[in-house]
Image (cartoon, rainbow, N blue to C red; front, side, top):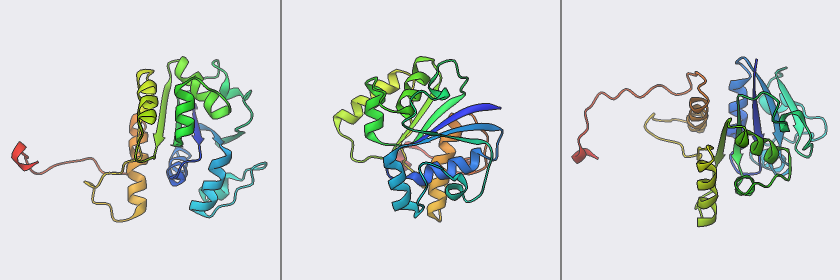
Length: 204
């Protein structure tokens, strides 16, 4: 099975990571997961889940147990996924804090998530970062431009409304669907857009 790295950092929107993992676990992938210290705090605050950092029970986070997720302490900068020789299909940082994004953009590797991202970039592999910050300063925009120029996909957590979402879960699925699209992973989270009307410039 192919390997995908998922990094969860301390930005709001950890539900995106939770949902992405739930979907990927049902597909034929080995998931390599690392969670930053700040992300544990956000998970507790936003989802009400107080995860054990030293002995992570992924079932608590996903709502069911699975055997295709390998967890790594974010301080373990020497983990296998930090090696350029370890075969990785892609890496997703979701949500991606601006601290993490800016660090990666400037080649800083203070932890496993940052190191794995740096390796993913230098090896020419797919890196997807999902920032949720708003508004964006020129510092943040410059960091995003640096990463984009290096081949990183910047996928902001900006849910759409054309699919007529009825719940928060629908909005979450919209972003997760975008991530899966970038990874070329098939899904049925959001129906394809089929417009029955022809719009003109005057309609917009």
